[in-house]
Amino acid sequence: MGMDSDAIIMIDYLKLTKEETFDIVDKVNDHYSTFNDIETYYRYKKKKRLENLPSSLSLFGVGPENDLFNFPELAPKDMEFELVATSDKAEEGKILGRDYTNLLEITASFNVDANVGRSIRFCVREKTTGKYVGFLKLGSPVINIRPRNDYFGVKKTPLDLANKHFVNGFNIVPAQPFGFNCLGGKLIALICVCHEVREFVNNKYDDMEALFFETTSLYGSIKNISQYDGLKPFMRHKGDTISKLLLNLPDELYKDTRNFLVEKNGGPLYKTDKKLPTSVKMRTQDKIYSILKNNLKEYDSTKHAEFSELLKEKMAITTQKRYYISDYGFANTKDYIFGKTDKLIKKPNYDSYSFDNLISWWKKKAQKRWEKLRAEGRIRKDLEYWNSSNIETLDIIR
Image (tube, rainbow, N blue to C red; front, side, top):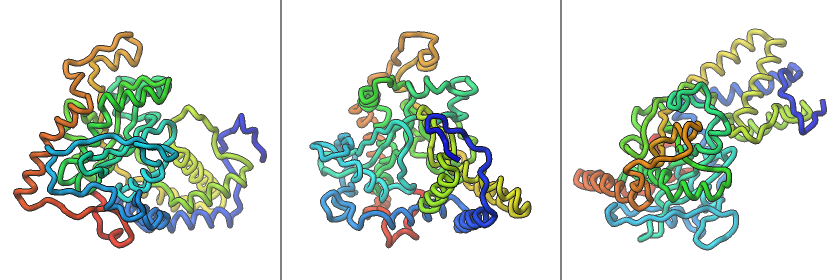
């Protein structure tokens, strides 16, 4: 059936043949049978993604060791840092977006995917060595998240307010072993909430007035601590998420299934709304499962029950995420965001949120950590990045 691109209707039921339904369901079943826990899933996804990366990821055509920081004998107190923004074309003082993505891909445990809505990407570079110590990517907030609603005392945060004032920390990743040796994850997290980054966001997007930063831990209830802990007063834990999501299908299966169903439908599978900062892949995947279950219900009730139970079982693999916020040093963000006052009030420690002050605050913590590890002989010295030789052995949770 044809569809008007300006009025795409969310479909409730797309008729498939029995053979088409069973073929797709079998492929989904095969995929989900390969893992039973979140660590195995991350490793499986990373292995698939590495197969598509170029053999040389160095900006200079050699190896990651030429770009990523690995100076375990350099004390944190002697380090200096700068932000390097990304660019779609060669530009002095910036890193190409594709190089940023490739370096982040081999550093992070998760797969690096494009986020919906705004996107602000930085590398953090140690100035005395010229090497990258970490990566951060900020963007539009998720539509709805329970801990945020509880914090603001609302059932659901109005979308216009979220888009105007909220910044989400999507990727906050230190290079390793810098992260382990020097609390590198805490450094990158602190930089996310500095005034300079907040002002960069406001200048890049005319409709932005960033006042509220949020992020969630990667591993959720697998670990009861996070790199964001211990960062008060700059960042605070404000509860845990409660939603459970199905882990994404592998890229090839997702694309093949989506393309087949879109062609079968004669157009997109759901109503588009550019204002919604939600994952296109997530919404499409949900619709794929809905279509499959509706058809299975008609063709084979037993298979329908088994498939529904499988999705429920795999959904349980995902974990609650720890939720963290920052108010950038403002005292009355709640009242200001919700229109109860038109005047922002700065906290006494507002100036402490500057880039330089946050780096100084981090250095004290990092120096103690580094000295302790050094005294105990536990400083890690080998650069850790994902490659085909260590895909089965490198720690997912680091």
